Amino acid sequence: MKTALITGITGQDGAYLAQLLLSKGYAVHGLLRRSASADVIGARLSFLGILQDVQMHDANLTDITSLIRVIEAVRPDEVYNLGAQSFVKTSWQQPILTGTVSGLGAVNVLEAIRIIAPKTRFYQASTSEMYGLIQEPRQSEKTPFYPRSPYAAAKLYAHWMTVNYRESFGLHASSGILFNHESPLRGIEFVTRKITDGVARIKLGLADKLLLGNLDAKRDWGHARDYVEAMWLMLQQETPDDYVVATGRTTSVRDFCELAFSHVGLKAADHIAMDERYLRPAEVEVLLGNADKAKAKLGWEATTTLEQLVVEMVEADLKRLSR
Ligand code: NDP
Ligand code: GDP
Image (cartoon, rainbow, N blue to C red; front, side, top):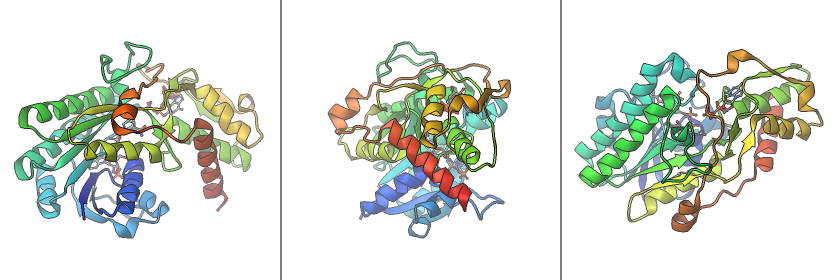
């Protein structure tokens, strides 16, 4: 039986990845950072019905001693570093924290592996935000990076350190450059979930307006459930490498709204309005991924369409709010 350790197991991707690994017979362990809200911290794992099937360890990405203790105790075959301050907008309010957790946190994990168990395979959650001010219309592993937020800069540091530890110390360290991926478990502050939650509230008569920022921003949105499969595939390869994971289709926030409102028989234009509070100091206007390498080498392809994703998210929010 293989053993995996997931940092960020209580987040969106961590929950879906834990579910995938359990279905493959893995023993799944995760980091749990102490919180005063301990009663809600396992909500995503509970939503998937797997909270009791994973083993949690008291640790934090910013405390390398805790990581050393966990890795020593668990002796994982695979470590997936998904933990991060992952919300771009917050990264301008908390740039130091973002750099410490999302940047240095990855290096803490890499160091702990290098010191204790250098044969452990490592996955780093890199991001399309690293392309920021895009240098090519379709972004691949070869496209130059241009980060546009403290979050993206922190992630780029973690990305290069992953490459560096692979090349310097021969670690089996891979980095997945994942484009935006969503689900009913997406954090409520991200635009897709904010929209589907807003649509459900308006449909149920709990609200009548949805205030958003830049409606013209475009993203390559996929389903988190598909994307965690790519993470696992990367660690099954003989040679570690970096891969773009994306759908190859880009859609504006406005068009995402259209899809979500039309699913419940409403018109987006009747309910959405722009609010400057949701604009950012610097914007990533458009992202569009080229996942040809993942397809050729991993045999991976996105299977959920944007339309299916939107319906699943709106239906889940309707159900949640109707309770
Ligand atoms: P979430 O924000 O849902 O989850 C983040 C996780 O990190 C949570 O489990 C959180 O714990 C944990 N965490 C935060 N700070 C610390 C810390 N100091 N020590 C330990 N754990 C910590 O993110 P997603 O699941 O959406 O994303 C997973 C990873 O992939 C992230 O690194 C993200 O930046 C990256 N990514 C995500 C994309 C997306 O579209 N979703 C796209 C590309 C990359 P807690 O529950 O306690 O808050
Ligand atoms: P990101 O790509 O990681 O920043 O994911 P988000 O879901 O937070 O944002 C995606 C895009 O939607 C960005 O270009 C935002 O500027 C844009 N956007 C427009 N309105 C909103 C809003 O109200 N909230 C958020 N989070 N993003 C918004």
